[in-house]
Length: 258
Image (cartoon, rainbow, N blue to C red; front, side, top):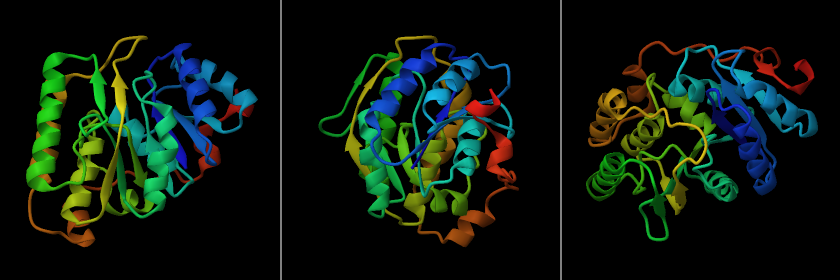
């Protein structure tokens, strides 16, 4: 699998995140630390980890700044058939990365870590954001039958062929998880979930701006409802796609270049 971690000035805290992932992930994997600018404070610390573990690579995002573009670029840069998106803030449980990847290997196109199914939990975070996320997850599960109770969670695994077929239109924030879940639902492709315990970040500050991201979330929330579409119909409604990285060796700043 390819583990995609979008970062923004995480500094030394990325070391703890990477140590946890490298310790808990047992399947063959590459870990892509995707940053928007060469001077990002995350880079030197991530490259130091990469010197001792070749699974880690820092990747410079050239699609534009912001988490949506970083995730898009990371998935396009992935060499594995499964891409798992996880955050750098320690909120996601790295022990579940292998389980999510195995679900995709078994045939689902989106595997979600769910805070809202039995056995799941969300600890901390802004109350209004929690309420809206839970409401969206429940209503999409009940009425749109999307296959998960937590469509908005970013901690998901994807079939990379599916992602490259339907494309990613999000350009703002973390709504990619909802977008790809909604597209899988309209294509009537399988989505599955496992319970997770999400912990609000302990280091640094959250950059989630609900007011700014809400229009994009609502767009994909309503898109999840509707008749079945074909892949061609999904592609036809997309705008021009950004070119994929032509040569991973040119786009990835690994430990040797540091």
